Each structure stands twice: as C-alpha cells, then as structure tokens.
Amino acid sequence: LAQVEKQSCSVPDRRGLSVLVGAMLPYFLIWPLWFSFAVVLPVINSLHWLLALSGPNSKEAQKQVHLWLFYWLLFASCGLLNHYLGWIPDIIFGTLGYMVIDIQQEVYLGIAVALTNPMFPKLETLLGLVDSHSSEVLKKIHEVQTQASSKVTAAVKGAFAG
Image 1 (cartoon, rainbow, N blue to C red):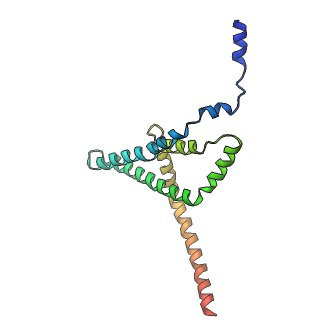
Image 2: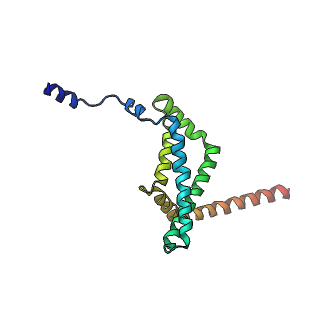
C-alpha cells in the first residue's frame, strides 16, 4: 500500500488549465473586490495623507499626496482610454476566453490590487518610472508639436495664397 501511495504522489498533475478554471473568482465577488481596491482604499489613503500634510511628517505626506494624485490621474486616464480603446483588451481577452479561460476581470482586479496594495509598492515604481522619463517624453512631444505646427502653418498659407 505504501508503494502504491508513493507511485500516485510522483505522477505529475496533467490537468492543465482545468486547475485554473476552478481557481477563478465568481463574478459576483469581482466587482466589490475591484471597487474596494480601486476606489475605496485609494480614497482612504488619499484623505489620510491630505490630513497628514499639516502634521510633523509633512515631507512624507507631500510625497504620498503626490503619489495618490498620480494614482487618481492614472485612474481617470485609464477610464478614458477604456472608453475609447476598450475594444482592444476585449478582443484579446475575448479570444483568450473563447479558446482557453476567461480572465479579463481577474486581470483588472490584479492590476488594481498591485497598484494600491501597500505591501507591493507597484504604484511607487510606476511613478518613479514616469518621473525618470518625463523630461525625455516632454522633449519629444515638443519636437512633434513644432514639426506639426510648421506643417499646418505651411498648409494653411498654401491654401490661402492660391
């Protein structure tokens, strides 16, 4: 009997993605969890650090207010992008959901948890990445703006000159 148990334990799990299907969250839990991590927790943290601005740790509070302001700008811009370009992840996750497993809502929940969970400072990492490359991006935007402005000016002058 011990030998049979030893053999059965050494057989690898060959169920594939059926293990993941059983691990998916029920849909009625996803929205409250997402709302808790994407809205409620950031509101609490934002208000906490706004109240702490007048306290003794005002330097840390300013840094945290900057971080949560960045979160709210990111939240609003992602909502706007999702409104206009939401069909792109819908196609990707729809195809994936049709063929293998439907995980679109779980991915959105995972992103919200990763950005707002204080145990994993992914929001600080993202802010640091944006801050480190912002001057390069602004320089490139200025170059494109001046090129576009000169082309539009030339086109307008050409249209009204003739």
